Length: 204
Image 1: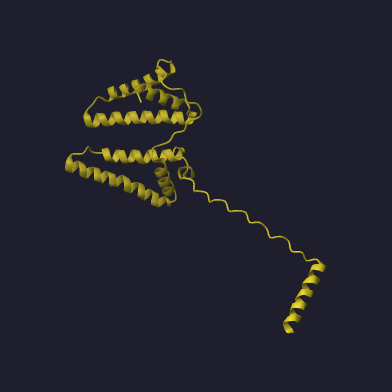
Image 2 (image 1 turned 45 degrees about the horizontal axis):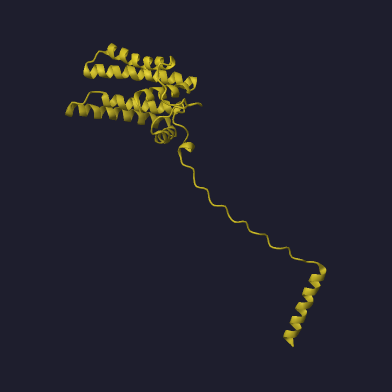
């Protein structure tokens, strides 16, 4: 897929979002751009404001060109509402629901354990091989934050929708009901007479 096709597809997807999801996407895009500019400035020494302005220019420029109709259409517009779905949504959803079932103290200890553990591993890697300090810790913290926020806003879907539907059992064949038994007095008398005759013949 070409760059223009990707830009058109992203803009069409954004137009079909609800107002709340669209506002959240703008906020998260701004935070991601700010965090990326800070990391590149801290680790590579690039100019922070230049990175921020370039990123904003790219985002605003792609949106403005699409709204003004300056991008050539490459595919028919998709209609209908759109939804935000994070990658690996079924696994993240199951993990979030398991986390929600834990007691509050256990959840706090697990969160602090992941953060302190990633910080300790990052510190060891920095000391051993010169790995950028804080990069692994920031990556783990951002992943946890995105997973929790995505779960809170319904971006992970539902566990029932994520699981495949169980196969249906084949229908059982219908069993015909037995014919009704005739119990009229004549039939009963005839049956008793036949039974007496058989008994008499047996004794003889």
